[in-house]
Length: 337
Image 1 (cartoon, rainbow, N blue to C red):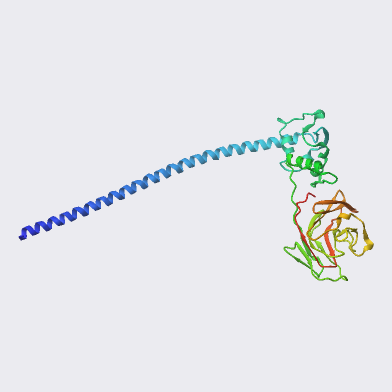
Image 2 (tube, rainbow, N blue to C red; image 1 turned 180 degrees about the vertical axis):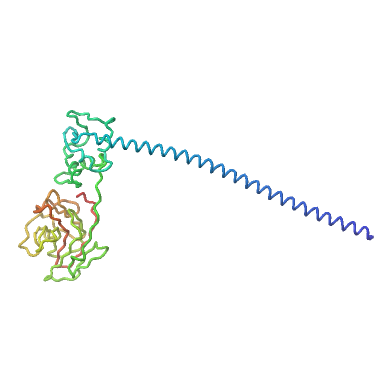
């Protein structure tokens, strides 16, 4: 191979290499342009989606504002209708006639009665004596009115069937009971031999000393409370008493013999109550004031009235008094008192 031929072949190789490099560069550029075009399409699609979503949001926002304005107008109309309603309302409840104050029926917010009195264009008195008809149990409806007047629902004296009617009426009328706050044992009014634990819900006496009576009091007055009996000995009393009473006088049940007492000091103050009122460890004892009378319950069974409260205005506090080892735990009985 002469020199001229060698130079030509070398030049040709360089040209081929340059052509290949240019081809690769062009392909890379084309690939990048393709990718950029895809990204642009994706961005355009996202922008379109955001624009569409924003338009949908604006439509929903306008709809919500319209509905809110309509709702406020309806509420204003309901309030005006309620204001214009008579101050005394007649009700025909299952054939029994009742009359009560409008303010009594409106005692619980957003109940059935707000709708009844607020929508006079839909619901008008439809019974004789210009009364609204309620297809509910008439004989127990006085308990519902009592709840609306006082905020407390009394089922005293009702059998299970009648109580069921009361609860059905409460549910139909959208009348909910407020759940009472949990109470605790008060360390400031607890004897030194007693131990309070478990977020102040458990009370324990571990030492036996028949010469030393130990007592603990709840931190707030109650008209109903529940304690679970983990164990107790003789001469153990549970009940209610007025904290300001100088002697320890109140309304007590002696757990080991089922007798009631006004003082947990000696048998002198004990009188018969109910043979079924003897308790065993594990039982739940409920103390409840119903219509001015103190009742004791064992595992949900009412043992009947034990005392008449001498002063209904006097706050009564839960109390436990014992000489033997024992333990008591406050439980939530979801009571209705």
